[in-house]
Image (cartoon, rainbow over all chains, first blue to last red; front, top):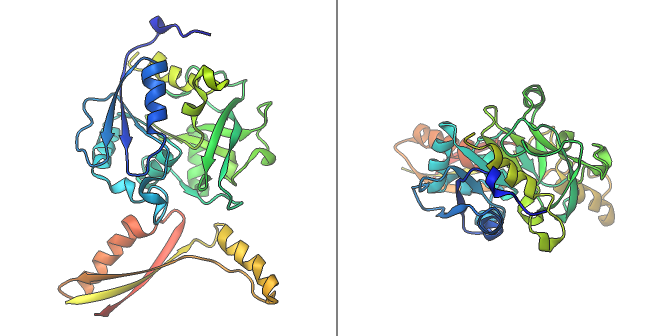
Length: 240
Length: 83
């Protein structure tokens, strides 16, 4: 189905590139070529977000995942700007390693542990959309499970009981691992994440983290565009 | 003064340590099935210049809290010795 760009707002996206990022170009491709948006590349040593409206921390293995995934990237110079931007209500999204960096920075609750199986898992998973009350899920249909790939060794979401209660009470859980029919089951929990959690947002619903890669399921050439709705959501309601 | 810190970072007890679990499992292959509950953390050493031991201790503590350990999933302890 061709996109109707008349119904979208225009945004300037900033994609942060750390040493070891490897999904930066995929995200840039989706935003520029498919969504037709302006994108600036932000090197991790930069101190300036170049006026971007929406910051994306892409997937990869920043700093070789040394110490813990995302732990070192979290202290990169650009992250101090990103943290300030988020504190002022700016939109930030972290995908995979980007999610790990956000968690390390405390911009989203919880932590990403080693997969329970200790295996690196690279395959399609199904996601249940738990809320449409967020910028990145606003245009999604919660009755339909999204098929989106994951590729991670440390995607096992963990948060303590109090945090989990808050996440549930405040509707901050964006996605849960489910089966094809949208049923959240323990069998569909591929990495051991608590309550099958695959993505969350912060309390003010401006910072988003998810382990699956929507940018890898956005181009029609890949025969799966289930991830595109996330980018469409951002542009349909942002600044509205 | 120069100090050396010996830091231990361990996964919290309530968190499953899959690495430790896999190593526990392999103990059987060594004929050491009496070994249980292997848990694997990190040992970190570093050198620090500080006016005194207390100042050094404070800085190492900050390093642990902010970077070397993630308190959501890990705990830490350290010892300081004059280098």
